[in-house]
Structure formats: C-alpha cells, structure tokens
Image (cartoon, helix red, strand yellow):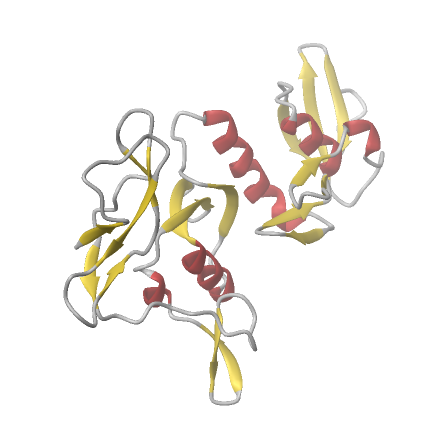
Length: 224
C-alpha cells in the first residue's frame, strides 16, 4: 500500500490518499488523511485498513437512504455490508446507552432496520463531553413522547426544536412552548418551587442546562 501523491515528506495541512500495489485491489476503508499540527494523521489511520477486492456499498438512487434495489422493490441493506466504510458520525445507541462511532452507511442501514440510533454529531465521539451525552440520552428517552418528529439532514427534530436553515436542530426557548400539552411533567425547579411543565418546556430547560428534577410524569398535585 502506498501514499498518493507520492512524496518523501508532507507538510502540515497536506492531505494524502492510499493506493494498493496489487492489481484489482483497493484500500478499505477509503478516505483522505491530513497531516495535523501534532505531526499525526487526521483522522488516525484505521486499524482495519487493508487492501481488498470487496465491493463497498453504493447507495441506489432509486431507493431511500439505507436501502438497495432487490428485484423490483427496495429493501434495507445488510448491516454487515457497511463494515468496511469509514466511521464519520457519532451516534447514541439507545440500547446500550452509549455514544458510538459509525459510518454514514451503517447509520442509514440501522435506521432502515429500525435500530434506535440517535444522531449526535459529525466526526468523532468525545467521551469527555458528558453534557452532550446526557442531552442525547434525554432526547432519546423523550423522543417517543414528542408530537413532532421532523427530519433535519441526519438528525430528527422534536417538538422542542426547530430545523434551522443550516439543517441543524435548534432548541426553542421555554417561552415559545405551549402551556399545556399531551405530556406534562411535575418539575422541581428549586427547593421551594415545583411547576407543571409541558414536554416542550421541560426539554427547553434541559437544553440550556438549567438544573431541575422531574418528580413524575403528569401535573403536580394542588399541594405541590
């Protein structure tokens, strides 16, 4: 396996690709790698990098994301067919409740199969960002209760969010949320204050990291 363009050395900021020396083989996962300021490749060269004659998954324009044409109908691609693709997204796997890196192919295939993956961000997962992980867990927990599920690029926006012009889910302010709704929560805002809040209002407060405690689902009792 050789680098291209072929040079004796590379400057910080320059990018390279990889070619296989053997005829008929190609490198997988495919990708470009940039020489970073710390004199390491960004992203790091994947551990599974290899020369192979495998055929990478190519999306079918006649079908939806994560699907391929089989005969006259579209079916979900097999998850295994995406394993050779480079990991480019960070998602929350709601089954194991952790952030995991996946390829775009794996993300769409999993969505097609109904796997509970929640988009977090493009690029690598950051284990140190606990706030982002907790927000993703909250969104996953409340997503089934939302009265709105609006596709927004790779993400899905819920009733407490809007899809911006740049195709990102942005939280509403609590004042933009209705005062009543199908899903209400009794929320302890301070030691002396509890309020009945809608799902939208509760999520809006969570989004700005305002501390509170959900006492129970439903309106607070009269004596609260």
